[in-house]
Structure formats: structure tokens, C-alpha cells
Length: 64
Length: 64
DNA sequence: TCTAAATGTCAAATATATATTACAATATGT
DNA sequence: ACATATTGTAATATATATTTGACATTTAGA
Image 1 (cartoon, rainbow over the protein chains, first blue to last red):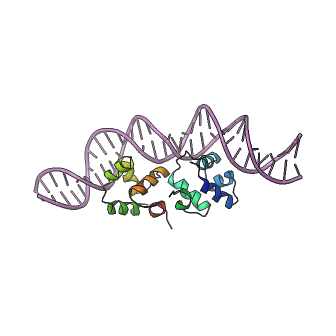
Image 2 (tube, each protein chain N blue to C red):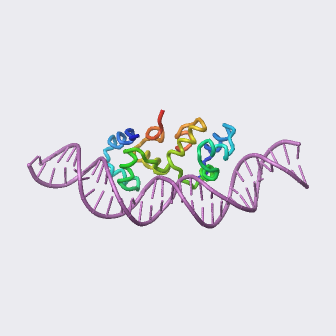
């Protein structure tokens, strides 16, 4: 399933996928696929994304 | 750094590394290395571990 | 002390996350 | 309508998570 929370948080921070990718140290495709879903990122990457977007793991990656 | 929170949660749930591994669908070594640290598990695995231990991502994998 | 369960360490093989590159599609402003 | 930024799609290559198996060490109970 798509990760809408992450996309929203990214837009809240006024970042394009490419800008977020650069900030986090990965490629744009990696960010793209995480937002698109059907992807299984590593914990370290999730944490880096959270910090770049001023969120926590639960905010962006925890369901229910 | 070691993941002490996960080890404690596992013991609280009266599970050996092997039992947790089986419950989560991975090998004992994977659990062992996550607890030992210097490891970068996938998000899906982290979520599965959290659910098996009745915790959230922030509980077990978020620092600060 | 003895035994078994649980934990730890190591090397090699396999599966999969991530990078790379290029191009298509959609949005946004002029 | 045009130009540009942004997002999406796809194929292949590389890095690394996870498996497998075998053995060493520690722990706890009888």
C-alpha cells in the first residue's frame, strides 16, 4: 500500500522527492518506491527519512 | 549499538531468540544480530517483531 | 558435575534493497 | 501552446540483508 503519510510529511516540509532523497542520502527512485508502496526499506533509511521530515517511526511507518 | 529494548521486550514475552525468530518468520541468526546491533533490518521485519512482542516501532527502534 | 537449552561466532550462499541510467507522463507557470 | 519541474516506469548492476549450517560458549536445572 502507498505510504501517504510520508508523502504528506514531505510536502509539509516543502521538499520534492529529489530534495528528500539528497537530504537522506539515497536516490530519488528509492524515495519514489517507498511512497508508491510495495517496497521494504531498511530501518536506517526509515529513521533518516523521519529525521529529515521531523517525524518519528510511528508517525510515518506504523499502522493501526 | 545493541538493541537492549528489543531483548527486554522479548524476555518480557517469555520468548527465546529461536521462538521469536519462528514467530516472525526469520532465522535465529537474524534476531541475534538485531539484538547484537550493527545490523540494519528491513522495515517489514521490524514491524513483525513489534507485533510479536506487543510493542510499536518507536518502542523498540526509535532513539531520542 | 552433568546435561540440555539458549546464546554467540564464523564463513559462504542466496534473496532483495538500493543505485544507475534513461525515458515517459503529468503538473505548473508564462 | 510552450518550457520546466516533478513524478512515474523500467531494466540492469551493485551492495547488503537474510539464510544456511556447523561449531563454541554460556546459562540454568537436576
